[in-house]
Length: 141
Length: 326
Ligand code: B12
Ligand SMILES: Nc1nc2c(ncn2[C@@H]2O[C@H](COP(=O)(O)OP(=O)(O)OP(=O)(O)O)[C@@H](O)[C@H]2O)c(=O)[nH]1
Ligand SMILES: [Mg+2]
Image 1: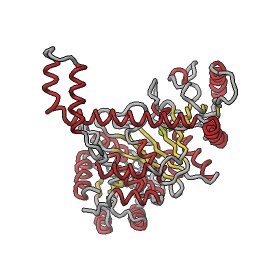
Image 2: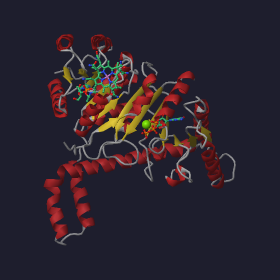
Image 3: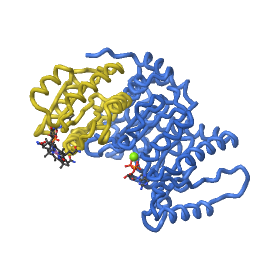
Image 4: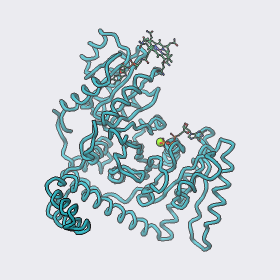
């Protein structure tokens, strides 16, 4: 979608890779798709810590913090991120995730407060649409 | 729905150095800045003018983000706080952007004395983003001692940074053909400090020598004139960044001592006011183009009115509609 109005609130997303997980194909696909949908995407690069990512997301004031995890460490990393956001009074930030995550874990992560998880073979358009919806549901800030 | 904090309240927190407030106000000003936001910015502007603003420019891939990272470490070691505004280009097709400067700055976060913000150009030429200088003001008002602006990789004459920073650093990478890149890019003259990055590479010496020779040629005689230094840096060998910080500090002292700082401040004010005026006109034009302009355009195409006359009519009409807070 062409974004002609320079004054329109552009959706800001941070895409992060945390820990030793070196799978970055998926996150790059997501980054390009979101950019092509007119969003500003801050990419952190590989091997960040939860602290680094949460601090960066706060400074960048992103609408959505998206974390891509294919390493199996999701049940450790997502709670840590949510906890840090809370401690830093940034719990209004939308947290999303993707990668390789078993269904049972997905359920549990939703209960913890992760807003959206989109796994393998999710078409890019679905990711774009659900990000727009998440921001619309949150409202102006 | 979430509880929206009024911008004036955020402004108060910015003065206390509250990072989340700085971050949120940058977002608000970047997404248009309605009157409520502009009012807060106007208030905060009174608290600016204390930070030393350094522009870092150079062609794509020259090593700007790497250098910013190392320079921030030097400033932190010297006890100063640093704000960074890192600009990347927006896609001309979608308007979206992938902001990747942060990839090299990962280890700088989790230090409350450092604040990094990425911004997209959103169609603005000249290497800066439209709201970049508002973001600089917010960091300045937030008490950061130094603010570094990393421009997009600039090519030819896109060098707005010169008119927005106190000190301009041009980053030259070695080994890009026979001529010095800086000359090709026409950015030789704009530098207050030249860096030759990637000085660990064998071809960097040639670039350093050529650059020094060029600078000698353009040297004016006389006392109290700033001699543009050439500083080699290497992120591989961790060399040159302390020297770079010292060169920037010397330039800041020179500006004060020579009184040149007054001219720079004047130049910065001029550039900003004119730029914003242009933006307001352009925005207004885009917004009102249907209703107000169509008739004028018709007259122009039918040779009843010349373009200049139509433009003057348009501006006169616009005067009525421009909101004072924009
Ligand atoms: C390609 C691949 C590799 C490549 C990675 C190349 C690269 N630079 O990315 C290489 C060969 C290097 C590799 C190495 C390893 N791999 Co591997 N790898 C894969 C494989 C086959 C495909 C991953 C992929 O690229 N998919 C394509 C992309 C487009 O899909 P995606 O990442 O899932 O992303 C989509 C969605 O998930 C979603 N998405 C992704 N991120 C995000 C983020 C957000 C916010 C949102 C909303 C959506 C979203 O959108 C994308 C588009 O639809 C998977 C198997 C699999 N089925 O996933 C194993 C897999 C991930 N690898 C695995 C393993 C074990 C490894 C190694 C440890 C192997 C080893 N013993 O050396 C190493 C570790 C490397 C490291 N440092 O991390 C395991 C992980 C097991 C686990 N989680 O418990 C898997 C699942 C294979 C398996 N079944 O065992 N691997
Ligand atoms: N050998 C060597 N490589 C360097 C040095 N500094 C930067 N690089 C490499 O140069 C490449 C570009 O570095 P960046 O810092 O991203 O350059 P940039 O100017 O910010 O790039 P853009 O923002 O894309 O214009 C990277 O691969 C760096 O690792 C250095 O001192 N030595
Ligand atoms: Mg860069």
